[in-house]
Length: 557
Image: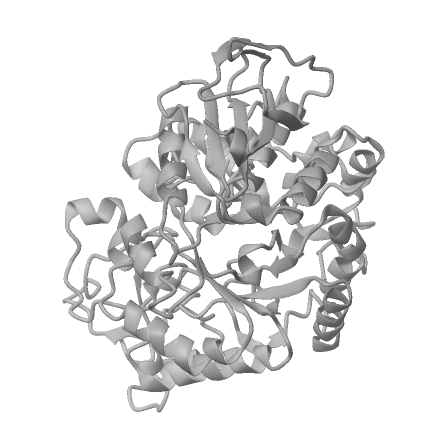
């Protein structure tokens, strides 16, 4: 095992637009983040990852970049970014930024030049094809609805866009594109940033034959798009020319790839990426916008696959991000047992093998927002997919029901700081998006005052983790993979063993703990009133109980 600083970090993701508004315009900004760094320090955060802060027309909330070397005007200035970086480092917080280079905005200078004529020097920065009669070049689809091809008037040819038509895909087969990307990466690294989270990075390589997808492939286009033949070649080149020259870490958003493909990208011997964000766990039960049922046994199996890698691989662990609903609403009980189940999920996330990624508001147990109609959604994907949904004879009510379980917009509501209008996010009553009405009972200010709050539970576990490399690097073993309500696992270190027991249900459960002995002692629990009775290895678990024990290995069975 190679010991690395980024294996020992706790990463916290900020969606700047929704985090904190310092200037009162209703939109979160970089100065807002700076003003909350003491809060992140108190929580115990080591690394801050901010979603795109670059100049953008905001067709897709900043993931459509117009200028990679300019800060979005709504977020502030380059001086504000430099101040953020400086203040982070003063507080021993590393700063990671988003790298969005599968596509740009259609307002980027590269694209305005590219579309102007077939002979322009930037023409091959993007992927252009002739149509087939009155139809696009092939049947590839956009994640935001409709064809992945858009025709322009200037040359009557089509350009490829996996996402919005305002997000044309770059042509990574062009050497000049790759060199331009490496140059902009170097620009930010020379400022002193500590790494990149790479947006939809498996999509950068395209199958240049441009065959039609089969009916099966059209059901999960992300898996097809992630099979580009030169992905590993490009990542090796990126590592060799840029990443390897700095003491940073790289993490790729791996939407669409299998766990097997993930193993090749993050293999330390291959020198591509350090970490990969695999979506199997966070999308359990999901099929596009449809959220179906899932079982705890399925979840445990996914954690086992993720954790039981060899010494050349290091997992990531996360249950929340800006593209998925709130974890306590999906995996927990957001009503009667919100606080307990949020703490249970905290214990799960922070005691797994891998680098944990937290998302803003997770640490106070924020929940999904309830949308009353489709027009309330901000997400391009919701509106872009509506016609396909109606075409498949699914009514709006059914679509809305599942969006209230699965939409990206649940994670993008305003951060809840205080029991004040707009949840204390902004003094502007017309903020850019909704605040969840439950901010009166779920907010940072109240969490900080309450020693038994969700925030303070996260803080305690993060502290336990920081003090124990045994816990960070220990092996993982699921002790009861077939139990339908209890998640029970060990972390087996060289000198100590940790035992975690989680009741993923609203039932009282009498549970026989596998391989338990009297030398285990309880070090943290989400039930402060619980009197621990363990007799003949049986324990009485209340709804959503979460406990962690520790023992010396000399007492292990």
